[in-house]
Structures are given as C-alpha cells and as structure tokens.
Image (tube, rainbow, N blue to C red; front, side):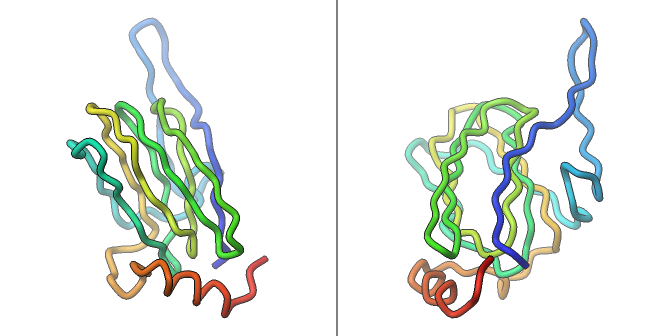
Amino acid sequence: MFANVQEVVFAEHGDVRGKLIALETLSSVVPFEVKRVYFIYDTTPGTVRGKHAHRQLRQMLLCVSGACTIECEMPDGTKSKHRLDWPNKGLLVEGMVWHNMKEFSKDAVLLILASEHYDEADYIRDYVAFRQLSNEREWQ
C-alpha cells in the first residue's frame, strides 16, 4: 500500500429543493469497497482526534456538517493540511499516513468510510514508531 492523501470533490445532484451526493464504492471518488462506516461528532473544543496512522487501511473522510481540519504527514516527512468545510469535499487517506483531526466546529460531523473492519493491529498509535517504520520502508 502506498502512502497517499488526495482531496476529492463529489458530484452534487439537485434542484431548487436541495442537493444530494451519492457515494459509490469502486469509483473514482471512493476507490475501495466500504466495509466500515463511522462518524465523529460533539467533539470537545480544542480536542485533537486521530493521532495515528494505519498500516493498510484506506479511508475517505467527509465533514457532512460543520467543518474540521485534517493534518497529514507522509512517511517521507511531507506534511499537508486540509480543511473539510462543505459536504461535497472529501479527503482520501491511504495507509502509512499519520493524521490528526482538529479544529472541529461545534456542529461538525466527520463521516469516515473505511476499506476494512476495525483491526487494532493495523493502527500505529506511537509517532516515534511511525517515523521508525517509515524509515525502514521504501516509499514512492
């Protein structure tokens, strides 16, 4: 699995009544079969969530209400910051990307689509261990 972070914009469908976004697996916007769906909400102000990387798991993050910021670090040390502040904006986060989720607005609901069921063994929760593992592998 290659480390990757990619911002995506979902096609909106709608008319004067409102808008709809359809999320379909095995497409260009959700390029994996969704095996787990969960969401984060009612986050205490100032809280930083995440603070981990996954070995293999792929995720699509969407802030379906409100806004939040996702900070990512690649194995080579490259960092990026992404503000999810509209329901049609998503962030694809693949394996071996350290990510922090923060700056949640009071009404934020962060929806996560995951490629696998929960597996604690896939998590890297220690930043030093993430850096060490990153240095041991060849990333392209």
